[in-house]
Image (spheres, rainbow, N blue to C red):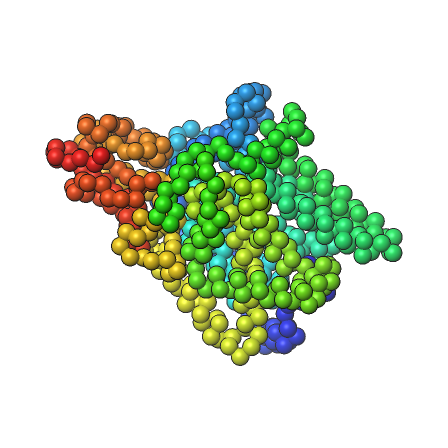
Amino acid sequence: MAKTATVVTKNKETNIKTNIKTNKKLHPLLLNPYLPGIVMFVIALVIGLFTYHDYGICWDEPYQRGPGLLSFNYIFHGDQTLFKKASDNHGAGYEILLVIFEKILRLTDTRDIYLMRRIVSHVFFLGSVFAGYVLIYRMYKSRFLAGLGFFMLAFMPRMYAHSFYNTKDMPFLCMFIIIFAVCHIAFDKNKTWLFLILGLLCGYATSIRIMGVMLGAVIVLFLLIDAFADRIDKEKLKKALLHVLVFSVGFILLLYLPWPYLWKHPVHNFIESYQKLAHYSAWKGGLLFNGKLLFSDKPLPWTYFPTWFLITIPELWLAAGFGGIILLAIDFFKRPLVYIRNMQERNFVFYLYCFFVPIIAVLFLHSVIYDDWRHLYVVYPSFVMIGIYFINKLMQGKFTKIVQGACILQAVIISVFMIQNHPFNEVYFNNLVSHEEEHLRKTYDLEYWGCSFKQGLDHLLESDTSKNIKICCEYTTMLNNNIMLLRPEDRKRFRFAMFDTADYYMSNFRLHPDDYPGKNIEFQVEVLNSTILRIYKLKNTPNVRLR
């Protein structure tokens, strides 16, 4: 955490200084080590601004907006519905931010509201990824590693898609990246105001998801270790204890301020929220895993998370992450005191902690997870930081160019997938699982949130000139959500109908991995040789029966 011990070799530092002297004639901006990160951020932002409208409204998004609205109405209008309505106890920290944007911009139409949410959420995501670039460069003084880290964080296919519409798991992940960067700087500079900011960030992260308390706990522990180490020097001891105080004040302030549900009974409601979310059981539903239908009222197999983790992260990133874990474990047992003191190595203790503790907590508390592993997406930034550590180690030897080439090749393969399958990158699977025809659809949940219904509706708007288009589907939530994203004049054309009177049947195959008997396929979307959305035409085909 401090810069007394550095990961960068002396040779690299010498090369950096030599390059700077050699290139004195270059414009100072070109020598800025953060310029590649800024360029990558701008490119990613431009891509996002051109494509954000392609993403549908996921199943949970309208529900998630609800606590934000209730909190806003309580703060600004004194509406007590927030306390009268049954709460799922999720923090409103991020949702209230989106509602404030909504109110400031005076948005009232659902299309405008949800498109705004896309832009704000994705920009927040990219901003956090740039913080990751800054962190990696500060640690390794390598533009290549920092740029690679940016790519690994920003263009992890599933999380890239989720960054537009998942306002629960992704903002929490973003806060972890930002906190990693600020934590590194705070312990390096040892300034009181930086620890206040760090406390505010950790408190805000906890107001989004209560698991953020784990961040506050370990940072306070680090501060107390430093206070103990400085106990002989009274001035240093006072400063260390002051840091504990200002961090704690910042944490509490931005934990409670954006989470109005806690205001009336700060301690009781916080404990209640923690207990309910630790054993969250509000969702009662099914999921498809390893070709079997499972239900949330029964414990999932312990292999659920490990399997999803292994088959949905690009292969080279997996190898780097696990390689880093092994190297760090070996080095830690050789030099444990180095990893405990305020030195560069302690950052990796922090990353290992933030990777393993959420996973262990979910397993130990028997918390419900579903919809692939999105509830644990938050461990991915730690995994990336550990992977970068491993790649840096490999680049110290004779195979630097080979390692760099392999990383670039992996990035190209990911980019090709993302371009070819836009905007359905949430259905990414690596090559550790079969991509044979319809294998994925019959084995795992694919497009479980129904965002692809938007593309289905867009197709029908273009291909069917009827004034009223009647659709039947198994889950009306997905249909209604994505109708809200259409222009007002287009929304009026769609009607939900029972099967016998419908013009079309639309399905994303959730909990129905097999084909339907209907043969008159109007439209379908495939990813990795598996169908994630299909529309059957029913009108003028009286012999079709889907059930």
